Length: 67
Image 1 (cartoon, rainbow, N blue to C red):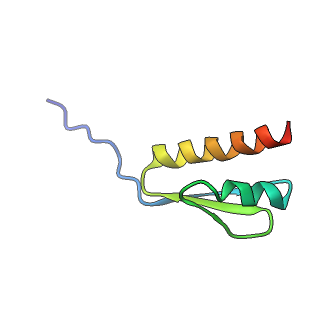
Image 2: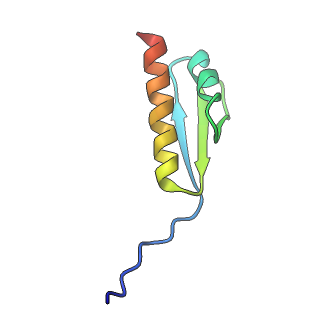
């Protein structure tokens, strides 16, 4: 049996800067997203996979509005 254990990852934060204020506000509709500046949001989560999923949703949400 292996002694391998995945690394423990502390709570993480990802900062996203949008081109305009409206996209930042729209991203705040997602859980774990908080607006911290005019065009900037912070995504925070203890689970890195969930953090990544929220980031992808925030990016796709803004792309859909811009198209």
